[in-house]
Length: 333
Length: 292
Image (cartoon, each protein chain N blue to C red):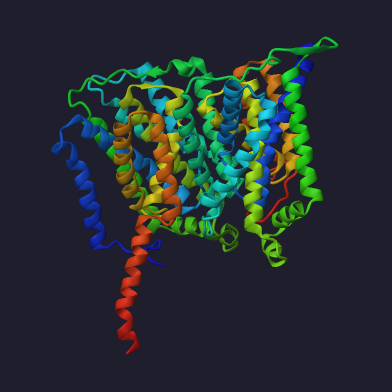
């Protein structure tokens, strides 16, 4: 199996990672227009969300439709925290607490994951989708904590480099997610997750600790998601239940995975880099969010029906075919 | 006590309508193991169609179901043909979730373009009327809606048990491969089944639009409730869906009057989590290898 877990670290792989991350790092210093940095922020945000989702949805094959619930929890955690303790003189404290937010949400989700993983496949998807509505309901109803539909404000940052710290913050979380995805794919955990995706009962039969692997991966995945939610909340400065726990954000973090290639490391990133600019262009071109919904649905259906494997696996399969064809005459003669 | 009984009456009446929505969802799952996440959006579409027919052509919503149900049946067949049948591979069940979600977004988008996002209500002459029986108010509208739902559910179960088509459906539910070997055109059965599922959404939508105000975004609330119902009833079991819908309808309406209406939809989710802890296959579901 090509690119299977346990693959060696190749020179080409290191160069690829260095080029991609070097490019992302240099971006805000090369391009200074606010709208470009804003777009890049959202592209990285969705790339990070897709990368985190891919850990459980792509590697283990458990389609979670409730990750955005934890995105919202991360956002509210950040907002509630900084209403009370303040963001510090340089406004950077909200970035330093991100690991804490991720860790806390990762731990909190363990009992939830334990219940959700009593189910498989479609029922798991339904349960996680329900989780989305539970958290949205709570955000609306726990008025004392979240101020309900009035929304919650975070003090604005003091720094003058308007969007750059946010960009670097979301880039850091995205890089962490990619590093984890890359490591898991080479690790024993990756093997366990792929085994679960292919046949969970057999995996359990040959001694894979499926329960542990699933819950641990889910916790890491939603912890990362929550960290991104926290950066997003600080960036926007004002959060409402319907935007912090938004089914559209959920779809936006699943779609890049399928477009780029589920279960690959770079697929979700590629998917997000294509989809987010396209989405921003649609929003700019058509303004009205309604037409944008229709266009989004059309793109989604197109990908699912025409390219169910995703871009990277399709390219890989084509390259393999070419290589086989090139090698075939020699083998025959 | 009076309040409690009143809440139970309300719950049973609205539970009947939820049963109709959920039966379409669970029927489709039984036949082709596909969860139609767009069922909620289709209920909302049905509500808008009935609303338009009432305001433009003055056709009573209960009558207009005779028009909207066949149209929505056609829509279901088309959606199945274009998006569900074309999915191939081992993971088509999971992919179908995402595809039907995209369908829901598309419907929401089209509805927002045509009707804007303001809340609408289908209001008829009997909307506000109710009977008073032994001190309890019984809304005429909700009673008609309940009666219609029960009638449609009875028809549905008669079709499934007494007709040739129903036999092919049940054969496909039990074992698609054997059904195909015995000459059942499972593709056509699936298409018809999907169409019927969507047609029940048309009927349920007409009633829903008269009871609650709705806008294109209402479908999320609906799908989360109906999904809880079908999981509680056991995926694929129509009888289970009916019992679950009535139970949850009563529970939600009791919570709404005794605690607060804002926690009513929460009941659905709490019951869902409880059922997963105690009996993951649902009330009437069968434990299958790989299904749960």
